[in-house]
Image 1 (spheres, rainbow, N blue to C red):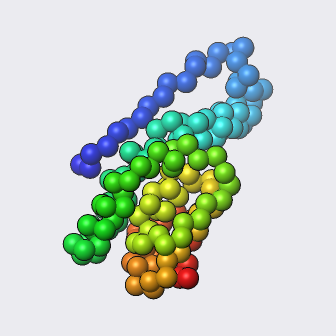
Image 2 (cartoon, helix red, strand yellow):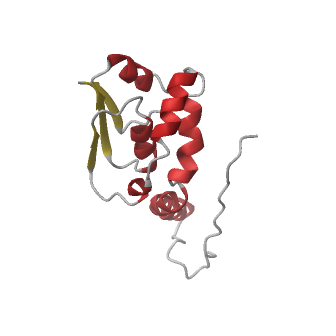
Length: 142
């Protein structure tokens, strides 16, 4: 087992007077689906924080060599509080190195378009070959 947490949320009971209960089973199922889809972003913001994704990011660099792992750990020791509190639509990381901070940012803020660049093509190649790159993160060689 991997260390981590499992979150369980008990929703309010759906009674016959509830807005979730429809005229047919299909309508009820659609209402519950919409309710859950609206709750997921709130739950993600609450639990999927920098602290939650940090072990995953470190695991992405585990077998890429001791020099790379040391550099990534060093990058992740800085103050990362801006990641959990970001409100914009786009974020750009210049001179991102191996891209660990950009990867962490993109995982926590999955609705933000993230671009990370570095002049060293070898570092970008390492970053591009991480397993957990989300669709909102693009690595560029500049």
